[in-house]
Amino acid sequence: MWERKNNVEIFAGILAATLENMAFIFTEELLEEDVLAEPGKCLVVEMRFRGPHRGRVNLAVQYPLSEELARNMLGIDEEEELKEAMAHDALKEILNMACGQFLTTRFGSKPVFDLTIPEVKEMEAKSWLELSRSSGTRLLKAENWQLAASIRMEDRS
Image (tube, rainbow, N blue to C red; front, side, top):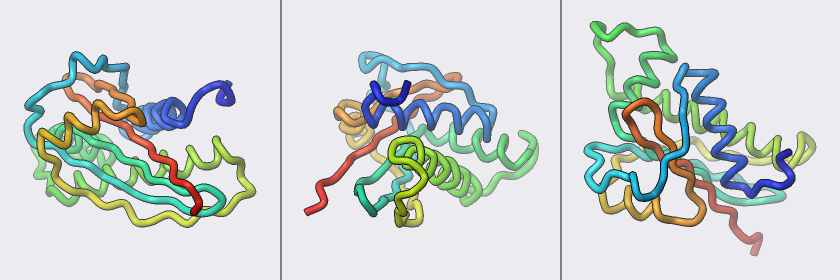
């Protein structure tokens, strides 16, 4: 099944399964024309990998979705205080798990990859729109929130 899909389709599918299994967040495809021009506060988490293949993966989300991820993953009620660092850590963990699973699914369990530590940054609306329109990105929605899963493979030069 995976052989006929390209890298971004594989990664987006793995990310969707990771969100469902780890945070009980269910996603569906989002069409480019439905992407919000003004998404409000957004976060992007990125990590790189290198080994027999090199590249980077990104996950961009509207901030309230990162809070919901953290609450679901940590079992924190709506009434309880949620620190921003918890939302960042939840995003990092989701991306780390999805990246590892992607590499194993795509290249098998024998190759060894070095992964960087995921980094979270705030994302401006302009960057959100650029990422959502790039060819290595799949757009998803989870409840009322939007997210973008992106993968870029790099040459080994």
